[in-house]
Length: 409
Image 1 (tube, helix red, strand yellow):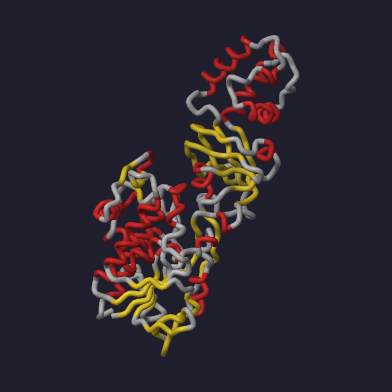
Image 2 (cartoon, helix red, strand yellow):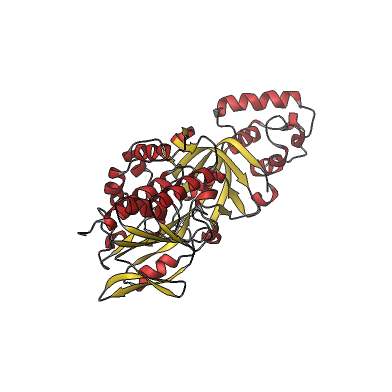
């Protein structure tokens, strides 16, 4: 059995290694000089390998086509993934929210472990871009790469999505799949920075906020809440909180979105009002703009004052109860209107891809083209942040590799 795997990312590496261990002759095609280029930059270079949770929790964090993943995740759970990497010599640790990282905090340790594993398994790595998938009578017969035909009984497409194109995810897989008759659900960015409808963020550019809470509203209805860290940029909002929130905002253009930032989540409004009163007492003869230094980062003060609708030069002792209530409301619900997401090239993952209706969930085999298999982000499945997307890559890659290696398929 000869297998060609296209794409040396997490799904492709997993597929190649498992197929080779199952006895197949495997060639992995990766256009970059080294495998795992995108994997090496995930989790800010730390690599959030998976999430230390059960399969049902993973599925609950997959907003698009979770049922399709039942079989793959049932056969390779987060616990299985953790055991797999520990066996490869990558000690792991679990952090907030169940996120699993290498103890070393180095993504390259995960990449190296996978690279040496596939090499030990006998996988041949060819650093050439695949230009076409070869077929005869509707069945795959190999790939065309480096000006040569490479024969193969099976082909596994694991080319990723369209995010981070500099790492090699340039959407080639969509083109190959479409040419073979597959439906491509239009790719869109997910886990991506957000663009403000306005100019407030521009004045706050570079300001990072920790330990804040956000609420995402879609047409004034709450659809998501979270707590953590975020960043103001020249175009809008970024940071871990915002990337997670973006996955829930899927209808730009047809629905209105607003993010409300709770700048003091540890205090309820009544307690916060007492805190404000205390600060006001200390600065009762000062201008209002000079009375918030103990409450807020300096850069944020003018924006909060503007949102509260209070004259920055009014004396603190002249501020009315209604104005103070307005300030407290803004501190708990600082509003940023969102017009859309940044380009797909800046997204961590892509939503959309090969329609799962045309893929057998028990084998990852194409229902249209015999001998063709899919794994990872090229499929129309994506998850929220927290290690869930990599778990999908490991599980679908493993299933595709083992299925493709079976002679009787």
